[in-house]
Image (cartoon, rainbow, N blue to C red; front, side):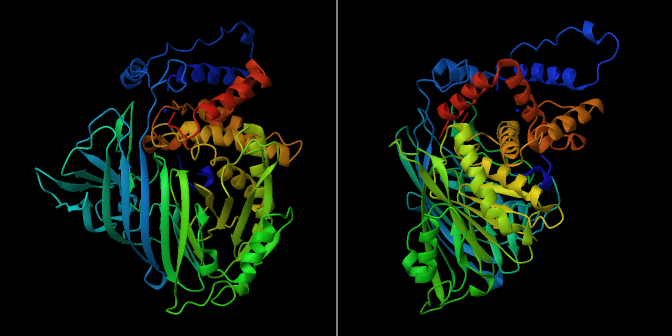
Length: 537
């Protein structure tokens, strides 16, 4: 998430703490006797018990790389949902096939209901619109319907944003469990600054029951969603169908499986042309939305959009009935290792009330190209879609293949490039390298801020893009508000702001590069991204 819209802990922490002190000594003006200062010494490495046990079990290693016995869980999602724009209402059924790849027998299963952030009485970091949260109409495991609140035997309970289930039978290693949940909720106007609706626009995230992560270090990660700290999500496959009135154009994580059934021939032709175009293709103008021009005519006035995504940690979608839709291609390197350059399609959907967005397709084009080159990890997916969400969000929020960003009318086009590069950098961490954003926000936000600044340096030659973050970090430290990066985002001190999760780790990475050299730094960074791709560091 971009820090301008929201406030924001590994055995690498002592090293980073020592480097942080080195950054301070380098940036704070020298005074008399400064030359005699002793070099700061990092504290001893203290390994938490869960990690030590994982090293002993062979799933992790002392140097931070995956162990030879590393495992992780998997979920196949099949979701059928209906969005009713006039009622601001979503109803659906989620069928989740959960694969227990762990060596443990699971007697309880846990599911996140993130929309319960908006339920009456839910504990939150900040005020939120109360919509009633998630209404559960049916909860079943293996076809057996579960009762709510039972003390013994099969059943389920809901505590804040976490649904806990006791299945009829334990889930043994190698077994699967199929969960079925019928549910509905009112879409909030601005859901924790990360999803919601505005004139002619819905951006729907955190909208389905999602399996909690069960791993080799923590076990079940059931930290509740409080609105500030972000998410820890497992990988899976998604087969999603969303129904809504004709005339609304839907973009989503994954590949659209039925374009002939929902998009007119003209739109499909322009999208295909964008696949081979380095310059912008205007897929739709603002006055071209509607049945017969943007979408096909539906006999019952309702269209169903079908999407498929594999090996992703989440799925979000947007629905628009009045916007501009721009698209072009951008190179991502040799994705399939056949010696040829591969491409992905970048898209921008924006309204005339956000004129700076006219160049967002180009900002996305550069950011995806640069980050694929810099990280050595080609962007892996068929598209990257940016949706303008003025009235919903101020900064930006990331989802696999999708991002929602503010109109940036007040902050200008340079700031819009910054946030675009930031949100697209999240496609590497945490969308591929799936960090625990609740507990270790510095891992994804710090790396992403660093990557954003590197992209800015190329896009704006001569700009010292890392300097503002360094100054913010030093400023907070001088005021006595410096805090450890290991502090969980939900419990960050307000006066420290975003610094411990964004500015501080990004600045420490710059310091590390200056100490070991660019070549060693780049190889270390790329090794980390390769080794932990599609895993949970």
